[in-house]
Image (tube, rainbow, N blue to C red):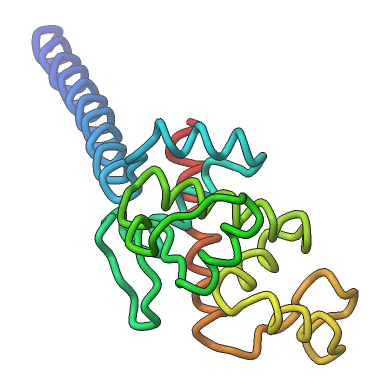
Length: 189
């Protein structure tokens, strides 16, 4: 009987050790999958320009992931291009602020796309101050967002959007905010 108890104890110990191993291997595999889905590509540029323009790195990563999937050659149906999907008109306007001159195709260069995307986000952050509103302006334009903020149907306080009237923009804001939360969770644990 004592031999049977000892043998049963070993089985339980082995079972518990196997469960622990599966737990830790599973957790590690989950982490690997999540970092593959939410990568931190071009980190040297993201870190540099997020710091220079005083925006959150995870916000910039989330915008890049959502806009281009980290494909520097990406072009949207609206002819926005590069990692941060900036349109030609917006790029021209941003260059009036920096005093620089680039060709529109220079947005296919990761550093330039990230720098101007970060710069644009910082201007929007100063203008609106609320991340969801910033993202709506990044997607739908400042003119649209400013008019929505003035309309009590879409904003109670002139800063926060209670409703975004363009469904694509509402989806975009949700998608970027979700990606930003994932970046925070994955990389800060």
